[in-house]
Image 1 (cartoon, rainbow, N blue to C red):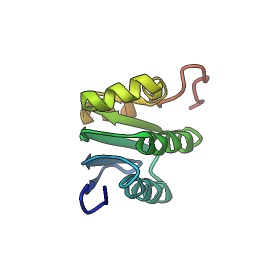
Image 2: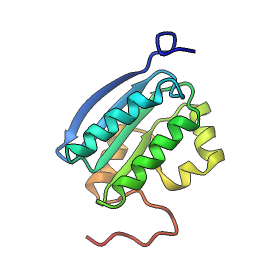
Image 3: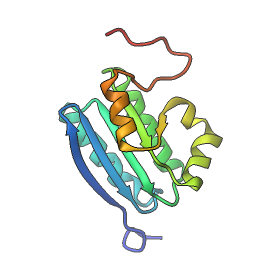
Amino acid sequence: MSVAQNPLSIKVDLPRDDAVLLTIEGELDIDTATELQHHLANQLRHGRRHFLLDVSAVPFMDSSGMNIILRTYQEVRRIPGGVYVIAPAPAVRRILDLTGVSLTVATVDSVDEALAAVDSGQVARHPDEPPAEK
């Protein structure tokens, strides 16, 4: 399927100086994942540390989308920062759970829950990794 047949829409909002909310709509797959990667890289360059990915309108995500989320997680955990996957649809949650991504990257139910985690100083990290020093 080409990008024209399977468009991806990404809306960017800045709820905090160091946080970005990307509201993603459409299938996140090999044909569309590069667009998300560009948005994330751009926000990293602008100093964002917390990435809130609202995927509630993403009905399908393949390994391309998961890899981009994991790469972003690896980048921001050095800062330290966090990646929060918000309200994944059942099919997306299933792939995150089956692959273990949900064990590494925080999955939350709402933007408010993600912002509360940012405000409380929680950072998404691997369960075996020691907490970052403040």
